[in-house]
Length: 123
Image 1 (cartoon, rainbow, N blue to C red):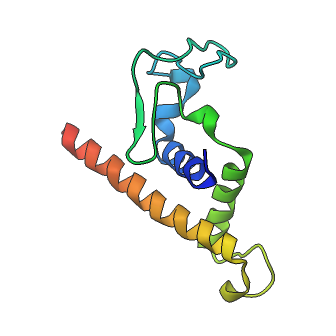
Image 2: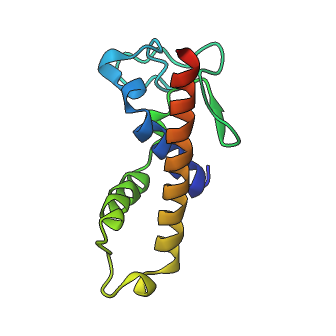
């Protein structure tokens, strides 16, 4: 799975954190295919999680998040507050960093809009 997909999954989980609370799992603990997580029931019989164009999965998205993705999401919070990881201003930041921040911004907006749309459809 590519880094962009991993980051998109991390954003989806972050925006929908209430759906990925292990202590209050509404998905019957289909945590991972290998059943390494406590109380994991293994894969579900059908796909329960979908990020259109990114992934359809019969196991929880939470265990798929890499430490790198967590780190980038933390950096994004600093970035939005104007705190950059490298000396200088915006133009002094590495292209890879700026690309990641742009991707996170777009994907957070999309995930938040999708969530609001789904909540409005339920009403």
